[in-house]
Every structure is written in structure tokens, then in C-alpha cells.
Image (cartoon, rainbow, N blue to C red; front, top):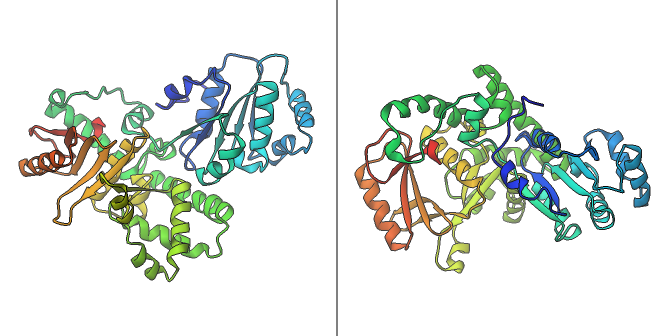
Length: 392
């Protein structure tokens, strides 16, 4: 599989190759989980390994025995030797209902090293919290970061680490690629398409797949059309604060039902919400969360958003992959900061920043005792305190 391109998350996963715990890769559909699982399979230099795809109903049967020792016989039939370290790779584990308890049994009794993928954290987290307590590491796979996007495009550009090293010619060379990334996003299947028509078709298919396999099959909601309408409304509100009361009125559903839908959409990775930054937790809970979509390409295709909003969503995508705590800040008087990372770094997103923007951000950051602050610019800028979106 020499054409398979490695993901940045691979370096984090490699740290746990030799640990006894199961490695679970989750994330939204079409982010490349199966491809990554195949890549990991080839990284394990042992013959005592097997790859099982649970999307195939016949493969599920091997794991549906009530007596787990019979599952052991099935695995031996498939070539696994339990007298030496076994490596078992399973794709789309949500299709096998009792899988967590099976995995626990084989980890505890036969020291099996599992590498697993599943499409929805909403399902996985509920299912795995107790069943595999202390026996798992969960890794979340997101659409490509911009640096991964360049690798997938086969573009050999080294993005400078320092702003002073980004000359106007370097900026121009990266700018058109970054524009494509903002407009069409980071789903691998979209990035690898070469024509606009193919990219748009791929985005349509990703949304259809998500809706049919997550919302309709997994969500089991009584009114799928309301969930669809909610998704479309949410995409139009990217970068905005969520007014639950207003949304529930628009959709003619209760606040409790809406909250359940939002929780599902976030759990299945379609949306992400961030809470306001506050030094006091009680204040934070009362304020509205701010909304982003998992991929700027999806948002652009279905909601036709302003470039500034898409740029902000794209910046969020690249910040979110590192698993850091992200908040936003907004004063009643109007002062705001788009993103605060780990209560330490402030990022304000601007298409074309001015000196006054840097001054305001500096003052707000000092008030909040933040250690660092930067304006994230889409345009070329000679101002101090600016970085570019493609550097994140």
C-alpha cells in the first residue's frame, strides 16, 4: 500500500503500539479511518495479525457467538495463533453490538492487541466507557489539516515556522493552495479530486453518507426531516453563538429535543461547539456556545458562507485537531476574541488585519492574563503580532 499517505496522528498512535490497551480510532465518516487502519496494519511487523471489516455481515458472525471461547476458535480458523502475541484489526466496530465485552475478554485472557475503528463517538463513548475502562486509548481522526492537505496534494512545500520567514513570494506560492483548502475543506476524498465538479460531487456524497448512516440508522430519531433542517440551519450559523430558544422556535421543537439533536450531531463529529472563556465556571455555563462545522468545505457547499466565516471555521479545524481546550471570549461592550487555547493563547481571525486590531487584542489579552496573542490573517501583512492561517 505504498500510495497510502500517512496522517500526522500516526506519530501519537505509534507511542502505544506496545501497550496492552486497545487503540480505537473514531471520527466522522470519510475522514480516512479505514485507510489509517490499513496503514497501521502494515506498520505491525508480525505475521500473527488479521484485518476484519465489519461492514461485511459475514465477518460479523465470527464475533456474535455467545460463548467467547467459540470466537477464539473462529479466530484460530482465520489464522490467529494465541500462543504468541496476536494483533487484531477491526474496522467499523459499531456493527457488532457486543464487541466491547468481547474485546475486554480477549485483552484480559489472551493479551490480544486490538486496533479498532468506529464511525461515531456518540455511540462509541457510551458503549466503551464502562466495558473497556482502563483498556483503551481513543484517537479522534479529523479532516486533513493544511499541512496534511499539502502532503495529499503531492506538494513539496515547507511552511516556515516563523512569520518573519514568510516572504511575499512564499505567501503567494501558498495562498492559492490555502484558498482551495478553505473553500473545499480537508476530507481526503475531496482533496484528491482534481476537478471542481468532482469535488462538489464528493462533498454531496459525504453529506448523504453521514445523513443515511449516522442520522437515519444510528440516530433512530422520530423526525429525520427536522434533524436535516437543523443541520442546514446550523451550517448557516457557523462562527455564531447558538441561541437555543430561538432555534427551537424556528424548528417548532422543545428545547430538550433540540439539545438532544445537538448533542448527537456533536457526538458524531458533524459540528463542534466551544464555550465562552471565563475565570469563573458558573458564568461560563450560562453563556451561549459558539458553533463550527467539522469541515469548511461542507459548510461552503451547503450554506454558501462569506469567506471570512469559512476562514474562521478553517482556522478552528486546524486548532481542534490537537485536542486542546478551545474557548471564545465576548464582552457585553463588544470586545471579543475568536479563540483562546488552554486559557493561555489568544487568536483573533481577520481577513485583512489593521494595527487597531492588534491593539485591541493586546489590551483584552492583558485583561484576561493571557500569555500570548496573535492575529490570524488571510492576507499578507507586515504588522507585528500577525501569523497566517496556513502556519497553524
